[in-house]
Length: 399
Image 1 (cartoon, rainbow, N blue to C red):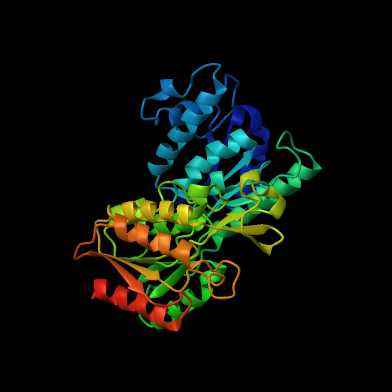
Image 2: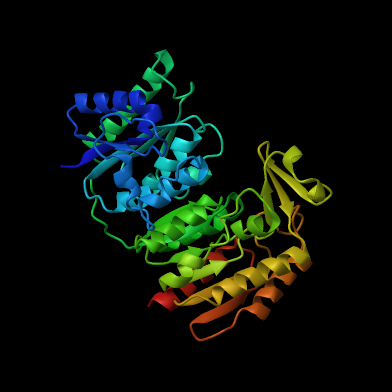
C-alpha cells in the first residue's frame, strides 16, 4: 500500500503539516509524516523522526544535527532526505509546505523520486525563480500567498487545495499506454521550430519524439530522461543553452550540459541551433557591457544578443571538447547558411563571419573518428534538406 508522504520541519510547521495530513487521510489515503527539522524544538508526534532521516546522510546523523549552524544543517538534511527517499518503496506521492528552507529540504527529496510520482510543494517562493528547486523534474509548486506560519483563512485554503490536489493525483492514476515506439529526445527553440517539426514528421512513424524547449531546464530534462533510460538517443538540434552558460544569459543548462549524454553511450546527432544568440530578460535587464551589441527584442520579456566571432570560437571549442568525451556514436552537423530563423540573409542576426568562426572552432577541436564525425552542410538550419540530413545521420548511427 503506497502512502502520501508529508514532509517538512515539524518543529516550526507541525500544525500546517498535520492539517494537510488530516485532509488526505479524510479521503481514505494512508499517510506518512516525515520530520525534517534540524533545530532543538519538539516536532510532536510524527511517523518518521528527523533523526531517522538524518541517519541516511553519508557521514551519519552527526553531519546533519550540527547544533546552531542552521545553514549547514539544512544543506546536510536536504542531502540526507534525498538518500532517505531512495530507500523507500511505499511513496505514492509527496507534499510539503513552508518557506525557502523548507522548500529546499523537501524539493531535494522530491527530485529523488521517479518521473510521474505526484509531487506538490506549497512555498512562499513559488512566485519567483523556482528553477533551483524544480530542476528537470515534475514538481508542482503552489504559491502560499500568506506565509506558512499558522493556520488562518488563507493558509487553510491554499494548503487544503494542495492536499486535495495530491489526493486526486494519487487516487486517479494516469491510464497506462504501452509504449509502441522507442522514444528519442529533440531540442527546439522558436527559431529552430521549422527544423525540428520537419525532423519529427520524418521520424514520427518509427519513434515517440519528445521535444524539449532549450531554456536551460529543457536540456537538463532531456539528459535526465537519457540517464534514466527513457530515450534511445537524442537529436540535439538546438544547443543554444551553451551560449547562455558562457556569456551569462538566462537559459543556461549549466556546465554539465552534454555530460550525461557523453557517458550514456546513446546515439547522438547534434547541431548548432540558435548558437547565434544569448538570451536575456526584458531589454533593460541586459548587462551594461552588452547594451551596445546587436540586440533583438523577441518579446517584452525576452531579449536576444547576437554572438560575435570571438564568442562563437569559445562556444565551438566548448562543444567540441564535450563531444570528444562521448562514448557513443556522434554526428554533429554544421548548417553553413545559418543557425537560426533570424540568422539568414536580410535577417537581424545574419553574420557569416561569426558563424564561420563557430564552425572552424568545432572542426579544430573535435577529434574525428569513425564513430565521431563533423558534417558540413551548405544549408540553412530550417531548410527541409537539413532536416533530412539530420535524419539520415540518425539512421546512419542507429541502423
